[in-house]
Structures are given as C-alpha cells and as structure tokens.
Image 1 (cartoon, rainbow over the protein chains, first blue to last red):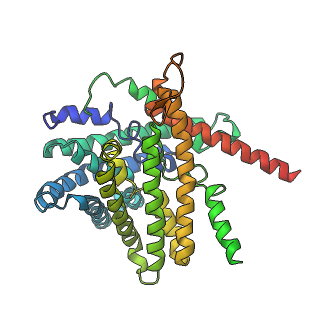
Image 2: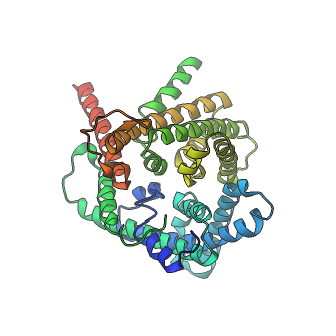
Image 3: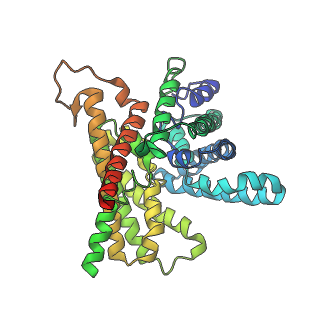
Amino acid sequence: MSGISFYVVFFAAIFTNNILLTNYLGMCSFLAVSKEVKTASGLGMAVIFVMAITSVLNWLAYYYILLPLNLTYLRFIVFIIIIAAFVQLLEMIIERVSERLYASLGIFLPLITVNCAILGASLFLVIRKYTFVSSFFYGLGSGIGWALAILAMAGIREKMKKSRVPKGLAGAGMALIIAGIMALAFMGFSGMLNIT
Amino acid sequence: METFKVKRVFFEDLGLNNPVFAQILGICSTLAVTNVLKNTVVMCVGLIFTTALSNLTVSMMREYIPARIRMMVETLIIAAYVIIVDIMLKAYLPDVSRQLGPYIGLIITNCIIMGRAEAFALSNPPFLSFLDGIASGFGYSYVLIIIAVVRELMGSGSIWGIRVLGDWWTNWSIMVMAPGAFFVLAIFIWVVKGMRTEEEKGEKK
C-alpha cells in the first residue's frame, strides 16, 4: 500500500478517488457555499491550503507522537485539535499580513474546521498507511479535487438559476442531482489509476 | 406543559425539523455508509449514542463552558464519545469497523451533532437535551435506513446480506457506487418536499 509513488496518489486523489464525489466528504459546505463561483473559489483555495498542511501535521503527530506512545485511539481528538489550532493560527496570520486576502479568504476559515473533508483526509492517510511525501500530495490532491468539484458545481448552479426546476426539487435536491451526474462523469476516470 | 414540550421536541426532530431532508445536515455519512444496510444500522446506533450523550453532557456543563471557546469544548466532548464508539466497534464488530473505516471518526464532524449541541443543548436542561439528541438521531437514522434499503435492494438484490430478489434481477451496480447515493437522496428529498407542499396547499383551502 505504501509502495505507491506520490504522483499516482496525487492524481488519483484529484480524479479517480475524488474526496467529494466518491467519498462524500465535505458535503455540507459543498451544498451551502456552491451558489456562486466567486465564493466557491475562495473556499476552494482555503481548503486546498489547509488540507495540504494539516495532512502533513497530522501525519507527523500520528507517527511521531501517537504511535510511539501507543495512544492511537486518541487520534480523533488530536487531529481535530491540530486542525482547529492550525485554522485559528492561519486566520490570525492572514489578518495581520494581508487585508485583501483576509477579506476574500477569512470568512471561510472557520467553516473549514468543521469540514469533514479535512478530517477525512487525515483519517484516510493513516488508514492507507501513506508515507510522509505521499501524505502531503494526498492532502494537496484531495484539496484540489474538492476545489475542482465545488467550482464546477457553482458554475453549473449559476447557469441553473435561469432554468425551471420542479418546485420540490429546487435547492438542495437539484444540487444533489447535479452532484450525482458529476460523480458519474468522474467515474469515467476510474480505469486510469486506483489507490484503494 | 412539560409533557407537551417533551412530545414537541421529540416529534419535531423526526418530521418537520428532520436533520437530513429539512436542514440538509450531516449528509456526508448519509451517502457514504448507505450502500449496505448492516453498516448503516451500526452507524446509526453509533450516531444516536453520540448525539444523545454529547447533548446530555453539553447541557449539564452549559453553565461552566466559557462562551468564547464553546465550539472547542463541544467538539472535544463529541470526540470523546466517538472514541468510545470506535473502540466498542473494534472489539465487538471488527468486520464492520474495517468497512466503515474513517466514517466512524467522521461522526465528530457530522454537523447534526454539533448543530444540536449548539442550538439546543446550550439553552435547555439535561433531560430535554438528551431526548432531543435521541430524537434527532432517530430522525437521521430512519432516512439513512430507507436510503440503505433502496440502495442495497437495487444495487445487489439483497437486504441485510440476504438475497431477496431472484436471479431475474440484474444488479444496478450504479446504486452501490457514488452517484446512486446522490440520486436516491435527491429523489427522497423531492418526494418529502412535494408531500409537504401538497399539505400546505390543503391547509390554505
């Protein structure tokens, strides 16, 4: 399992094992924030960045702290604290360094702490026993995959505003149907690579 | 008055305020675990356990939790219960635990639990919060179970691993894969919303 090279992991995380469309992670914010391309791209960028860094941090915490101390059952708590602390730190840094970046990215950061995709990526990389480098690329790839999906979704939903949807299906229902069709489309990649 | 309130708390979470199709919360795991009924039921039991007890704990501690860090405290309480669920599953149902993989851990970030703790347990006494936790858990579970039955039946022709449809049934493999989950949930929401608008129309007349 750990013998897979990192670029395979990277591309598989974007396309064949897209964290949103095949593992259904991060659905809540995916449905809530995908109404406009602009906000969706902001959240997407934030997810890419946070996911790549927290994957690495959680990998370090798991293999250098939890495993030697035989405390692996505490991993949920440790991961969530690391993610929350990192997001908080990032928010403070961005606020100091760049007003503009904070205005565009800042509001999304608190949302990310409860985004299951971030925690999910960390849990997957422990279960699949990735190496350090693979973990980084897995986090980065998953983030890009997630951002790709939410951008596509927001684009489609902006167009959908003009079309007439059955009343009961408007809103979340329609979003789910679109997500289903997107998942079908992404299944087209599935022959290319496989990491599970 | 008191019994009335208890009843209202319980039934609102099951129907009108149902977390999955009225508030569209917590659907990550809704979709991920529903390809096999058995896993779904295990997941639901874990979820009800976590929601009920974390609601109870948050409610008991609500006067001592500083408002600024309440999210963190709530998350830690939830995480502690999820760890219990995880350890129990590993000990008694190792197969299911392996199949569910990370999704047990992801109960922590399930918005339902956090949402209930935030919206209900922080402002209500322990007993009511406990009931509210159980009710939202059930409201979530029955939707999950319906979806799981549909998906397993159509995807593998079986329910709870027992084949119920004969050989004439061709498995819709799409149902056990990702897109199937999206479609089934969408149709489910459609049906429920449609029924509700019909009811509203009837009331107006």
